[in-house]
Length: 229
Ligand code: C5P
Image 1 (cartoon, rainbow, N blue to C red):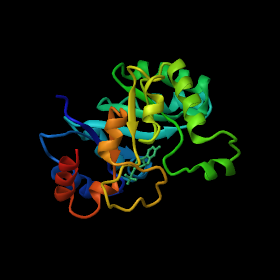
Image 2 (image 1 turned 90 degrees about the vertical axis):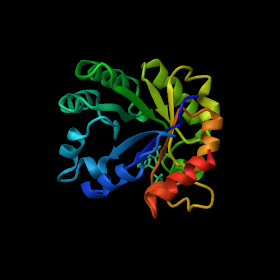
Image 3 (image 1 turned 45 degrees about the horizontal axis):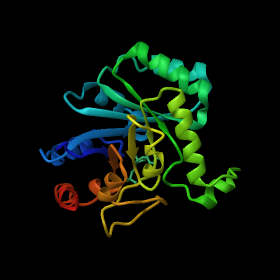
Image 4 (image 1 turned 180 degrees about the horizontal axis):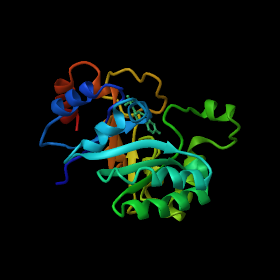
């Protein structure tokens, strides 16, 4: 059986904290990768640290969203980072941006997978109304998934609730679910939260876990995660 794929969200500016996260999440029961977002990538030592990481699956969560030319240039600027496996972009950027990003990514690294972010897991139906959307999250993510597929992205990012809904549209694509909490953990700022087990049951090909693993005793949290699956 395939090992469950977990990306640990390394949300910190400290390389030492990341070294600790990496050493405390070693296990042969899970397929673990590490996700770096803007917090670490923009920090003084972040980019260099990432460039030197070897033999780790690296997920760069930059959530690009700009005009096509600017996004293509940003991708070009990442060309020295040959060790990145996944990069995120906002599907909201539209078809032209997505196509341009995919094309640019092929030029710098044929193996780099581009994942399209649907509606952030920190949004609820009432909060998306406030930014002008008239559709429900369910309808919106379906439209976004169709767009991501038509632009030939490699996968999408959505909450564990929507995975089931998008599985048919995103056949053979990666479906990565953040907003994951172990039973009893606080949801914090996340609104659409599911357990690791439910996310996989719904069809996620990988999950992203931050605070449920990195807060408190990391080794214990990893054991709790393994048991819960
Ligand atoms: O600590 P927590 O598990 O909530 O962290 C979730 C991580 O996943 C964060 O790094 C966040 O930026 C990222 N993420 C998300 N929702 C998305 C896409 C990415 O929470 N839709």
